[in-house]
Image 1 (tube, rainbow, N blue to C red):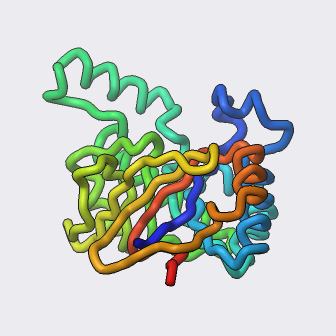
Image 2 (image 1 turned 60 degrees about the vertical axis):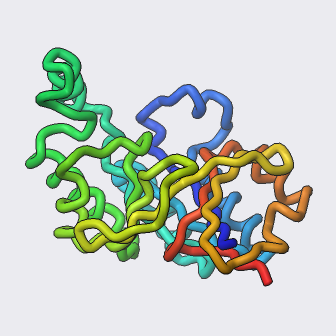
Length: 227
């Protein structure tokens, strides 16, 4: 089994309900999250919105400089613009014939490249991606492939499997709960996990307290391999 520890990091101007329960920014929480993982030699993959990088460039640069951290893209606005809202309304009105969470194809492409540019300015070479709330449409994979993304983490469900599509590795997410911490796992055949960060209850408690947005198992991204 291969376990990959990750989290999603959003800009504070998004003003989510989760942010009401932390006394710092999500990027600051992510730094502590990564530091705890580093104490146990655990690599992590953090998916960060482009606007978070724009709002807190120095902190994202600090994350990018950490040896155990890989940073992926997580959209720029997290679907929080009038264009996104209008496109979702159109999707509802037409019963899915037109519209999506991601906005029109040209706008989705613009948002992808703007996210990559914002993270690049913080020293990040973006090759992995997770859409906000795992929302994507029929255009997303091709747009990501054109932008140089190699790993995509939106597929959710116990029946999902690692596969290739549009030249991108699709890495599924399966949810489990371990030591009071929500994690997500992928179990490829022929691999066995005997020890991970989750074996350390103190670290698990700290990660839970940190208020991170979750963990997942991904193949091809930063991973913890058991022996």
